[in-house]
Image 1 (cartoon, rainbow, N blue to C red):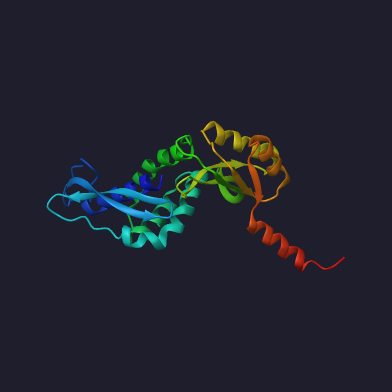
Image 2: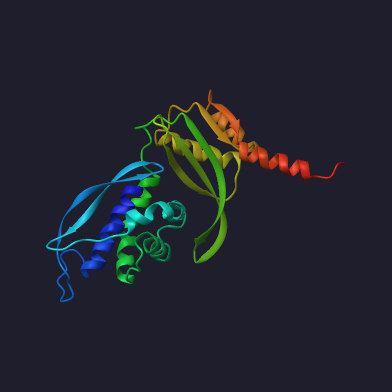
Length: 243
């Protein structure tokens, strides 16, 4: 997904520099597209290959590669929000300006949103059977979600896997009203239906419904309590008054 999103952003920046969409006839056009060349970008999820546009008789310029590393965390959070709240023009405008160092026009942002929406949906439902994920971390977050014109808090089930090459990968996100054994069971069944396999260790907090669902849906897999949650629990207990 990251590779697709960044390639779409590069194409949008090309549109801004040319002041014209692909095949658009306009007096404002500043040049013509002339294919692309590959450029490798090293990220925390591995090396991805981007298609950098070329301008016929000119030079395409972008700050994306220089600015990416310090913007990576913001982009990851934006990707998560895209899955939960769908692609919004406000978020896309923010992340493109942060990555490229320039503000895109409203029409370019709107067009970029249309192209990103199916990419985001396909990514969250992609098959997982091509890789093994020996280590999986699951957790629930609570985010503000816009539904029917209203904003309310909803739970987001999240799974992050570590593949056999040692790279982390978000396996999927699912919206639920509450965190319960039933909702976690639905989430694990969804991951398995997409091909999740080869799990040896799963890490989570010790929410009762979650742990029961893990033992039922991922039988034979070793479960371990997340050390962060354990430390938080220990801190709370140490600060509690003695009874």
